Image 1 (cartoon, rainbow, N blue to C red):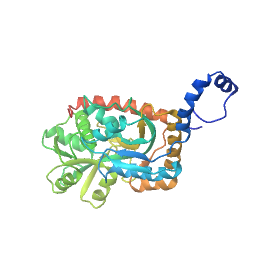
Image 2 (image 1 turned 60 degrees about the vertical axis):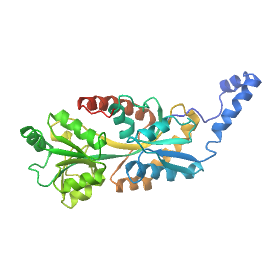
Image 3 (image 1 turned 90 degrees about the vertical axis):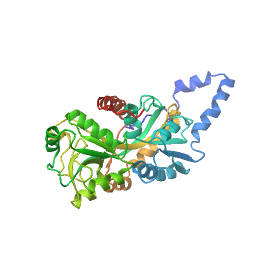
Length: 338
């Protein structure tokens, strides 16, 4: 059974033929151009908006999918890095683009879930303004600690933080980043006081963590791997619901017995709401075939990701659920960007 929504394909039923025969000639003529516009999709290049600069997770996944989508569609698929206000500018541009299938958005937990709680006056609504095309891969976060800390797991961290309120510090790549939100939600749920030190990007955060000037840092597991394997930093917990194959000995947050909390940064393509069903069906079918290829899944696994296979209906449900859940956690942790 095809997991993707589709309203096209297959021969017309007798009822459909009878109904079309009853349509006045003038009305039928008016319908033909719209039908042609969808049946020959695409007849020009597509663009994929990546709402962050080149080089990060958004860009890696966006380009991996865009490069492979061009061949089955028979048109170039051009990546456009539209940056500003974190991920807001690019995501808003995609939401306001013509709903014709020629503009796609690289969506993730950051711009589609967390922003909904971080901004009280966000210029887009990720649930109402977009249609899922397909999710491709997810990445867990790993909580890192500098080697001089007197604990090696999350239970020990929380016990130390409760005995020493305000003494520990944690880095992030900036206010409102996934690293900031996940850590703040964890400390809020655990009832501990750990001081936030925001940086402009991950590299200066790593420099101070390795230099013992900050104590803790959440980052995507693939990026943390080299620091842990070389013994420069210790892995305290991972944020996924199950253990990550890249760090199989590291407990999940849930396994720690401290709190129940999990978050993975998933990535995929979204289209503006009101994109024609036939166009969405074509995009979803082609993207699903690409995501299912062993070659792409191997590429994602080598980069530390977990390939995804999830229906459009389940994506909608997950998105609405996660927006509601994380908006509550963000508000409880007192995080706001406006």
